[in-house]
Length: 106
Image (cartoon, rainbow, N blue to C red):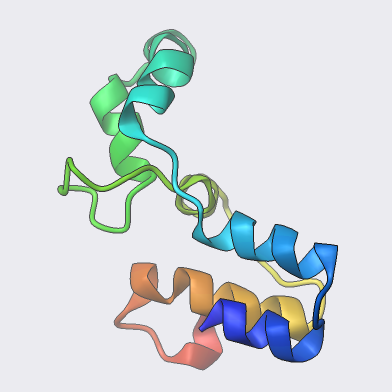
């Protein structure tokens, strides 16, 4: 688990607390609709429903909260880690999106 990794490597650190928040916090659908709904319709030309689907582990699960990291990886042409630790954390965060891939390829 990510929080366990950070607790082991960076005990009692504000950085660890920030990373834990970043990797586990999800945004409510109401909040995303409020702030990104009109943007989605005008700029990328998609419905709010389509934008919300890009930010879910399971795009078809309309009750799942929105995850900005999932949106970012789906909207990127390539993703890389800047360090070994970053790669390990990234693999844990994004493994659900690439369940059929070997860990070494995530």
